[in-house]
Image (cartoon, rainbow, N blue to C red; front, top):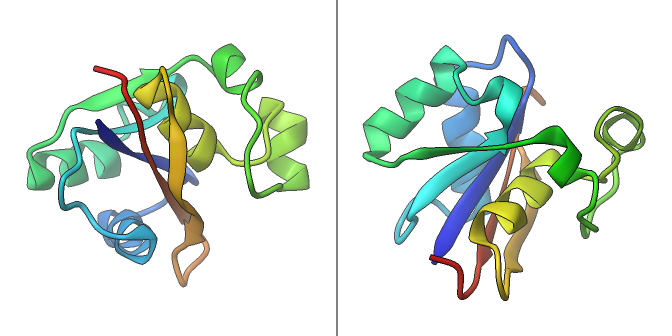
Length: 122
């Protein structure tokens, strides 16, 4: 299974999310998009998921805090206890055997990040 994790600011646009996802490798072969639960209902994320025909997986913040990531943001570490919401969400959504195939990429406007993980999860 292959999942894109997305981290984004409240005011991020669909274009920002799409740009970050494309920078991380694009949507081909994805089974879902994932983010922290409290942002899973964001309008821009819902619009992108609908455009791609993918479900959204909300990951509880406390679950993200347990995940080590390749990249480290000091601000994200303080808020969520992990280095990258995008990377941690992708890894958590994939589950068993998860590994990053694309580390966090950032949209040009710095409003969104994306990472892609693959693994044995269902």
